[in-house]
Amino acid sequence: MSHETARNVNVWQVDVRPFAATDKDPAKFCFEEGIVGIGWRVPRKPSIREEYWEMAKGIYAKDKHWVRAATPFLFQMQENDLVWIKDFAGTYYLGRIEGEWEYRDDPAFLQADLPNIRKCKFFKVGTDAPGGVVDSFRTGSIVQKINDYPVHLFSRIAYNKLAGEEFYDIKGEVAWKMDIFSLLTDQELEDIVALFLQQEGYYIIPSSLSKEETYNFRLAHKTTGERAFVRISGNTALNPDFYARFPHKTFLFSPAGYRASSGGYDHVVAIKKEEMENFIRSHENLMPFSVRLWLDVMEEIVKLA
Image 1 (cartoon, rainbow, N blue to C red):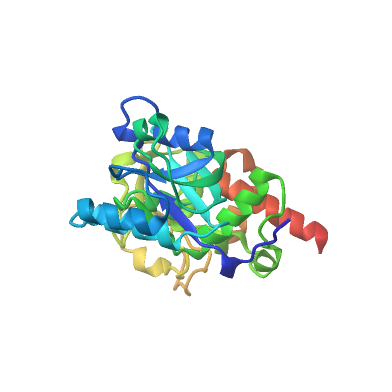
Image 2: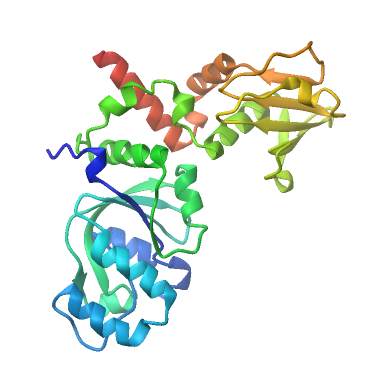
């Protein structure tokens, strides 16, 4: 049992480009073969990474994607680092690096366009992943380090859970962050608030998802048709007074609380933190995988306290 600590581990996103596959999904190939890989083949098999680098440089030096992917893949990834990949169907996999760089030129690896590989023990996570992981796949990067503490902590906890062993030491870190809201990303908060309000009889209008400062998304009540707006803030207190003159019903949620209001407003609803936490715990089966995992870990730590 290794008990790797946070300072020894990096978390990576590797886009194996499953949408470009003509035969087998490269992400599923990685899962089945126990590897993570990238492309950019060379004419003959190199024996060490420095030899590959020099050969590939003569071919791909002007390809910025190769430089940005090969540099970390060959020289920066370390054994026991964690890696996220995603297949064409949107299923996420989490794996642990188990070896150094290798070049595989046998037909199966060339057909998958993954000649540069590292041995990696993967587990299937499912279609739910932390917001920081989801966002990393939207950047267009083939290989990148995810510098996000909640994702870093979640990845280590998730690997322990999926592997059935305490490979990464995380209990000390979680113990001082027992407030579940401090562990959730903005996207996870949005999901939870959306589920809560749907229980209250509101439907989400998908096209209304917004990055504006004033609201996150709009709703319509399933029976009355009443329109409503939702504003969520993960770490900044919201002021209900700001929305007093807003012409529509507005739901607010902030785990950081609310600034003093001059009075109650019938059309501005500040959802209490305790109310949302009770909803999370009483509807655990509806929660994303990441939220369920946090709840499990926190419960285990309470038992050990």
